Length: 578
Image 1: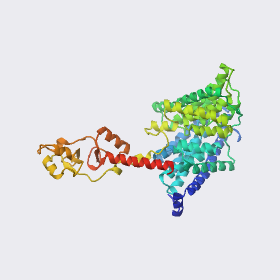
Image 2: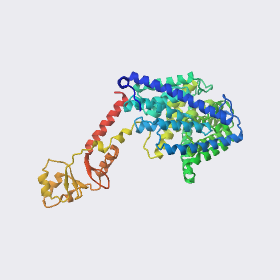
Image 3: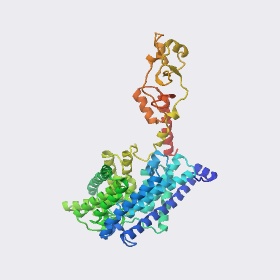
Image 4: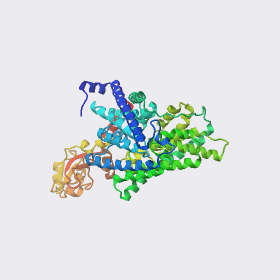
């Protein structure tokens, strides 16, 4: 891999102004990538579905029924076959920005990310009910990570730059720099500080400017919101926030259930997207609004006068289409799909309220905006992100306050009843203990091997107490490791206990402890501390393997806890900018 000249690397590592400049470059290339992906998928829609250049797939009133079913099915088959070919030549698992920042210090694969982008474009292009935002953030973060590698940034700076790439992606996609910035802070970086704001904000602004300059289509909502929201309106608004959280949890569970059903069906993985595409195509016969991410349909939702029955049916159809799309193997995310579903749910909520009582009905536009943001918080996370999206989309502070209130309720409901966002839930299913993008990867690098003491005092188990007392006077050692005739670990002894034994003909074997409790070099600090607690021991031996049991070192609980405390303090200082 190419690296920047030494002088430039030194400048970026020592002066934060140069880091801001690096973030600006990452934002520039990310903005171009966002525009290119958007234009590519729109062109595919025009070719495959025969729509005009100014038309949006999900906003179409009707499509050719044969194409509506054929394109997602054939596209799914093509995606499966492409995936089969890729799997033969590229076997590494690609990590997304959240996992990269949580576990790998911001390190991402550009090749893997390009594969994700290609699969996302194909999936969205053939009409799968998923958004491009996952692809946007993947390539934006990968570009930033590659830049960071080139300048050999420190771990914390590299994680920050990955957040800059993600911020640029969302800002360019939604014409909303504050939304992009706080998406990075809440979802990708995992924390906010004054020292990190400048590079993230600059990257987001530059990306948005690039997309503007290239004439890319922007996320715009032409809605008229009330200048004031009554205090009494907050009761149904908060109830809607809770409802959106529950629906969001249902959608995430639905994706998992769909994946499980496909696995149990024993259908070949390469064939699953075709079956999923067929199901999405059949659902699209009801309405094309279920196709793609729903950008075009979202604008229609705020204007059209839909009946309650149609709104509920559309919520169910879109939720099913999104769950089937991701569960069958199409590549993409639920960011925009959750916005669209939330707007539909909000309109349905307002319509149901109007049917129950007309005395104090909340505006359907208000409910749609609240639902849009609250459901996205339930699925994606980031209440401030969605609050700023509402602010930048409407320019209304009263509306933003209502949205934030609902987002807080949604976030709390999901946290108390489910505990995960869509991204972290999928990590949990893989066995990863990730609740956010906060850096926990350092705990995996702080292993027993790095902390242990290699100089170990040893004796054989057949040594008599008298000989032990002679070789190890009181105060000469605190821990001695006991070995068998094959020099394998069998326990540890405390010299003070041996000296307390009055029978000098005893063997030390009868005084040893922790025969079956040992540490392995690859164990993390977290696992080591848990072993100390379970064994109720101040020190444990480190062996090379569970079978060979050759002693390679010794680790004390005090030293492990001290190293853990030092690393925690170091991370705290990095986060606070001290």
